[in-house]
Image (cartoon, rainbow, N blue to C red):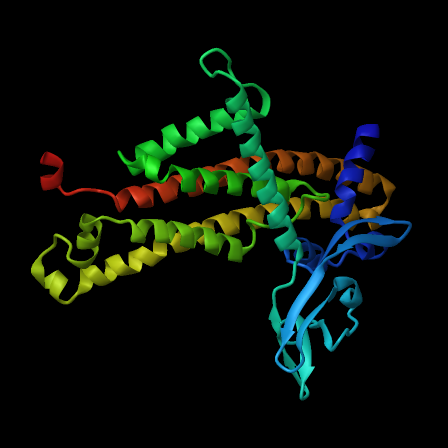
Length: 348
């Protein structure tokens, strides 16, 4: 029973205040946790929400730049002419202003929950790398074996570079190792931090399609900017019958394939991480949805929900690694395909 109380205390921040006090609003519950926000809700103390109110930085075409705390718009209030768009309005949930009776979205470069989470998680990756580098500067690797964080980092780096990058990219794999290793650790740490239900975790970074789009674009640029002449020949003038090149059917298919590869990277990572969050949130919600069914029913279903919640959390840790692994592997494969040589070049 004590362990159950501890687990429920850890899961409680996943539920908004209104859900604990009244009926659970499933739409607010699910999308409130996976969507971006102008503040970062930490917990609730004595019925009062404790949040980190982040700076709002917007530019209006009529009044110029504005910088203020998101505290002023947290309750849907209007501040300096700006407010959060209500449900059913254009740009719902985003900061808008009313100009001439019309709702207009200003240039918004605010520090949101995802931006802060991205900065924190990037700092974690940087600290892990610097910690590992510091150990190697102070120790002789021929006499000592790294332990702790440096040991884990070395194991992961060697696994990714030897088992993924070298085999998939080919002889000049070291040229792409820095980017691919960075992508792996960036995705892995962001995935892990997204599972933690309390600050500084909980931000849905890799479950945001904008983030996965940027990652996919980095792979797209690495593939197409550094592809060799054989790669471009296979796209623009492949070794197929002339009539297929003259139509041109095959070049069009190959060019479309240039964009479908990064698109698949973007959607795969985004969809898997978002689905994992939804499954975990859905499992936790059973504890509160069954509150009206009676103490006995609620206790029994809550115990089952907590058990599956912990199981899902552990499974999400595995998924966090698998998704980072898959993204790095597919990026390596795409880069390796752009570095292939023709049979004549191989024989020479």
